[in-house]
Length: 638
Ligand code: COA
Ligand code: AMP
Image (cartoon, rainbow, N blue to C red; front, side):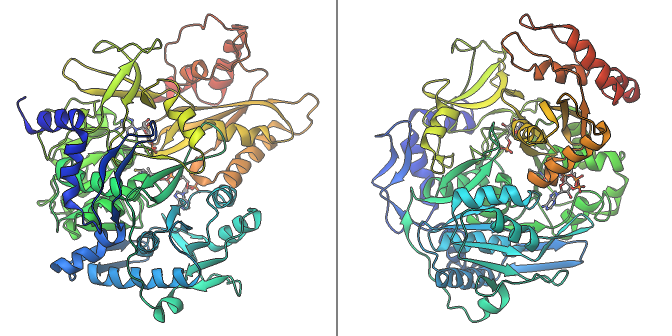
């Protein structure tokens, strides 16, 4: 073994208890664990059983006690409304303790759920931390989801309280959140006892007396609440993510293992020191936001950045450079789509010349496959290492990365480098045999998963087993396909299920199909993800109409687009659909979505041996050409 990465990787797999037990010394515990890895109830492994801890204490109070009280914990930058604000660790402690006091007064205690439906404002972090402070379980819902999606999450999580705001600033638009929240509560069967509403000057939310509590007024008189010790194995949060049906999966993360893993990543993957400014340009509604806007940087004593803007249009494609220069950001983590958006508007990165990025050290990319073009563009213009790393909502942190804190490996474009310590990544074929180097198969992780990975799905242990552990016994199925090369570099090529990745946002085509199928004129439908030069993928719908429908196709298409926006939300970016006579299927009736996607993207495909009627593929190709995909798309793209 020649380098620190090899040593750490080997140790993490041969003696996980010793490896993570060591890492756990970085966390402050009320009571130490009886066991680092509890494997008495497989496949439900637990980390640090017997220990008592509090996540908010470790992310906030501990730093104040250690002398970081006056350091900025959060830098908030909202370019459209022109606000830049810094919140010190001491102020964060005060606000968090006060909000915890308010929540406790509304009946929230250990194990209760608190939904956070907030835009990118520091108060979103305060809400998450206040929930953690009480030992409650937060469940953040991304602002781009529709009221119906929020209602689904309310019904599943059954929150006592929902914390929200009057509005969010989304690009140049102001989005009123409260009407969406009110509508979601109306739709939901479960009714939260209270909401706490942050009134922002841009929009004033109407309040329901007796139910809605004003953030500012209640915090002003609140009694600060102390951190409540919880079991390391108790849930810290639920984060819903797209599954293969309209019913999202509630990924559950614990307190102890989660902190140990995230704290470890800051030095070993990101090579960041306490006190540095770390920016994850994502949203608190996504896992990247949970792990790298909130928990990891704060656990590490860094300054985290809350940016309520976009990479382009707020005001221009120099927004990220302005942020890095103004806030002295050392490390940036974002999705490749953000860089594709910047590259499209400013291909020569001319706006970069206006800013001094001398202190900027590393760019990390994740959330979707990093196309080599974008990665090289960033390398060429930024002159810093650009590090792709692979992870999922379920894993909570990177499965594969170039762990520059341990050892910098040469970058191979198209690969997120090697499996990270803790993750025994393997490639299996359909017969569950190990693939040879270079051979594509299912990317799986040998159990037990390291700390910080999901421990189950909320109220759905069986679904957890069925979704992730059933197909490859003894392994976690990532649902990504790819290969590992001779040097141990991992390549993540595609999903094996119906998940698509639109602008770094994870969406289920199955969920969109459920919405389309609910339209009264639709007999059958399919949704596929087609290539998009900026967003990576975009959903495209196919509708077969019921016999005798008299409405125009144009009208029906408009209606289904509106329906998806209303039921799932604008984030689905479902804007294109077409009416077809028939859908191509196998003889057993399975829709050939993969083949349709290849036709749309003008990729080579093999005629499936089990196809029922090959002529339908020609019809589909003609339909796709008519709306600018398939052959026509190739012509316009060239
Ligand atoms: N609240 C309300 N609406 C939201 C929203 C939110 N928090 N986030 C997105 N939306 C809306 C957008 O306004 C847009 O609505 P529209 O159809 O009316 O225009 C729609 O959802 C799609 O949003 P998005 O996919 O983000 O597209 P965009 O064109 O607005 O921006 C990018 C494209 C690439 C600039 C943007 O997605 C981006 O910065 N992505 C990279 C970072 C990131 O968030 N990654 C996620 C995980 S790391
Ligand atoms: P999410 O749960 O939203 O984080 O999305 C997870 C999925 O995004 C993964 O299963 C992959 O399909 C994809 N993904 C994330 N990061 C990468 C990456 N670096 N390379 C390739 N695919 C990625």
